[in-house]
Length: 391
Image (tube, rainbow, N blue to C red; front, side, top):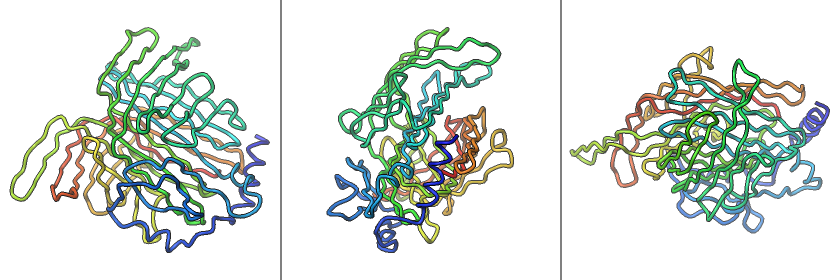
């Protein structure tokens, strides 16, 4: 508590000190529904931060402070996390390692989708000073890891291996169940972005969805599950976040039917690999335009308009609706369970609700080639999130 409170106080005192860049020029790098193919190798070139969006990762997403005392601000201001979800024919898994330097949060949960009443088994850890946590400095090399329990390691650029074990809490019993897992996913297009936050702080995020994964899961008490063609959602973030940050987020991966129209011709494609990531609250330009939203169709990224979240009064149990400003997305989400926690260390606070469940609805997009896709989402597993943080 003392460490978190002190770090929060220092962070509060330094909030007004940002990076040296012009906000108008930075926002000019973002053209609605346009994205670059070739990313710079570094987020800073010749002392200038490279703002924009690309389909491939930035190898070195770091931001040196331009004023004295940078190490203090870097320590208390930098927020890093890697979130991965995986859906197979048997399981849905969500896991994350979040490193705030003065504290870290790690979680993993697994849902048996073949159970008569699916419920989650959980592992959660909170560590002062991020003890035992390591965070990769690049999305294309290095490991983000939680002690000796599990790791998410980039291999050969766009390949990532997720491997480890832990013990999961069980309801109505004092005995935990062990889970061992080992899988590899290989990203194609990603949504990589360097973004200017309103206070003059930069953020790098890299997302993907509908990513193919192969591997194995062994949950104690069940037969080992070896799979090919699992689907992954990934969120890799390296950000000097705002002192007070509130956001909503939605993600899913599934196999869906897609109607493709070109001119007067329409063709239905079955079994198409699809992923969606939508967010609101952090990555919006001054005019309200959201720039962090995407649809992946067989690995190809298509940008989506600003997301609109219709959050119910009881977000853990009631149905959500997620749309976009231009009407291209119309999804409903039905919670089947939830991971939630509230922490109040006064100067550092977090209220986090992440239901897991199923999506239904449609996503429409016009490709760069002029084809119109209508994606039909039916009972797709994924998550939504409502998070309010003072950090």
